[in-house]
Amino acid sequence: MGNKLIVTAAPHITSADSTQKIMGRVCLALVPTLVASIIIFGVSSLILTAVTVAACVFFEWAYCKLMGREVPIADLSAVVTGLLLAFNLPATLPPWMAIVGAFIAIVIIKQLFGGLGFNFANPAIVGRIALAVGFASRMASYPLQGVDALASATPLAVSGELGSANYVTLLLGTHGGVLGETCAITILIGGIYLIATKVISPMIPVTYLATVAVLSLCFGMDPIVQLLSGGLMLGAFFMATDYVTSPTTDKGKLIAGIFLGLVTMMIRKFGTMNEGVSFAILLMNLVTPYIDALTRQDKLGIAKKKKEAAK
Image 1: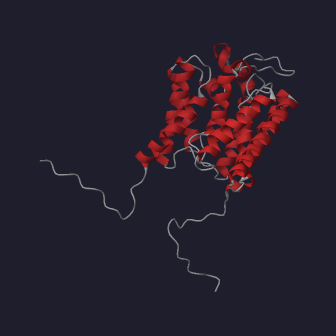
Image 2: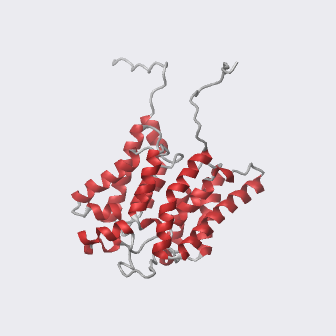
Image 3: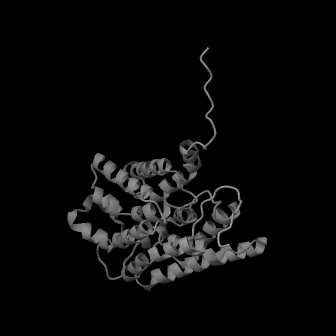
């Protein structure tokens, strides 16, 4: 009697993947970028990453214990949040500021809304934005160790001075920026791994990057510089594809990618900030429920309401 008839309510789709396995693959995909950041910025980037990961795990454990909930730290979602938050911070940021960002991400954005699956926005994105607003000068400090190119500013801040000779610099990441804004090659490797292992769909990142490239040409900007600069690659592959805060339908993902590219380029071209990825993703998170509602497939077996005949 190896086969048993199991009577349950829908859905009847099962998968061998668990939250822990999925989050573990995301962590693995981020390792190349972590290694690159250590090479570029020194051991301070490793210390900062360790602080944010430890703080996120601790705050999740402490809050769940305080509220009498089951502690979910084994699912590795807090570890992923800690890694992504660290990759949105400069290596010189004081650890206590990173801990503040971790508290905002885990306690305020994730746990206060019910935990994993109930947060309205990507916790790491909100933590990054909160720190950028509260500690603007420290979040905009990008010194490098032993690297002279673009040491005091990100490529987006001096994009008018960049030419094709600097494409290699952008690919290797030997320029100013936060930990995850530097080596585009390692971000691409991690993103391709997530797509190959079917952790994420390529719909959002491909549409996002394509929209940025097209609008860059329309605005008379170098599309390669725009694609390889700032947090675009990290945001496209690792943050805009978050299961909880991104659309679930294919049409919705297509709309989200175009929306992200449009908002990002509008901020980069017409805004007072050089970067627009974080705010674009946050806005997309906020409109995701509406995108899902507009693109959701009609339920099978339920007839559509007939329109009233014109009088």
